[in-house]
Length: 278
Length: 258
Image (tube, rainbow over all chains, first blue to last red; front, side, top):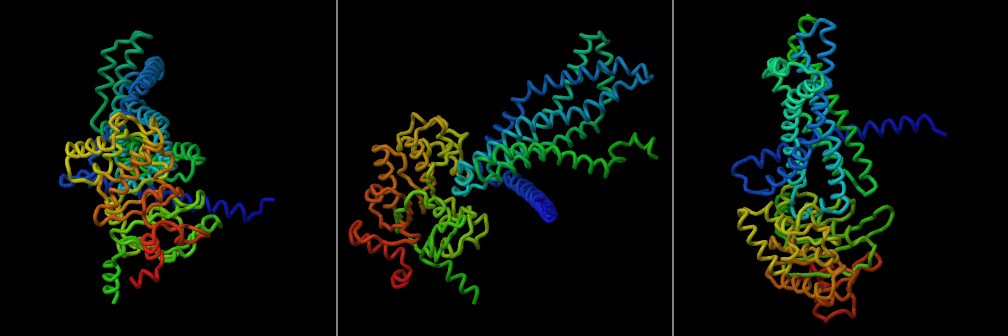
């Protein structure tokens, strides 16, 4: 029989664990930033594996995902362009093709699709890898050698992931525009150069910063959450559970950050919306 | 007063010291009031039956575990819990640790595994580090496997690589958790010789935890036996000199007299 006290006790435990996890993630993030600043200090001569580890992470997260992201960007771009070109003139907004494409694909779909793919592909793999390292006592071995796991595993992953996300997001945007228009030209025979000009003309420096910001936040969230859950494993049974957990928590954190940023800086980020909201 | 006490603690001759350590895991008593102290130039082998928490005890001695225990573990005369994290890491940079399962980093090849502590701690450049590692690899006769990943090694090979990784930083303290587990005869002799070489150097400490009687005989270190959750010195094991050494190491009363 489930008693009221059990329910409240479980709910309380969940809240306490949530609070603890959030605090530990913030600690891990701050430790990572401190470790990064230490390595970037020109007088610091330790941790010579930093570049090697970062390049390994970029290879795994960025380079190996190029084909996957490229194909998906092509399909996303092509679909949105075909739909927009067919339907926008019916509503009398055909001239806003460039702007709509920018907001839809470059600002929103690009970062979210890249985030999901990288999280699903690299983030989960990273969690499982660190979890197995913990179970096989490799993390303890690092600590026994006086090597901080944050310096050796988390920080290079963090840097590699952020750099990869920046590259992949810009890559997605370019492939979605150029490749998507090419797909549309093959299927519905549009004037390629005119639409290409419209799409690129609508993109401003603000959009570049926007993608950059989203990439950095996504990279940070994926790396810190994956590492946190990977390092928190106690036994082999937990590895599969934390992999799923890290995926879900990553998505949730990204949505929370997005809602907070939109709520706080909506008018600054989207000045064009002032016309509607006063 | 506190300052004086602190100085007194730090200036202790004993590098590793356990005072009345009692540990219980999941209602199972691991050890009860275990005490021993090792100063520079002392080495100890503890014979410990399998499955009774040997690795956990070793991790307690090194301060690597989060398991709760009663009593005090001191390194360089100071309670290990009172050290700041970065100081502990610095102390460990001069410590070698061979794990029971070798614990080689799985996505690094043998060369990178051995070079790992040097790359992290050493002020030397990469070329110098590579030279040191190459030299060590030729001494350990593992040239043929130096570019293999740990998953492709046999137990003997991974153990030898683990010993090489522990000794590459020229440590002062060497912790060995079952160093002879899974070794063939040739590798056994090789590992024993490396440990003996290390022990013959000045100002070093070796702590070996093993179940292997043959290893403890081959090493010829003072031997203590873990029996009924306590450390005792066997009466009919090794020469009398080793016995008295072991007694002085594990008995706090004897230690104070010395």
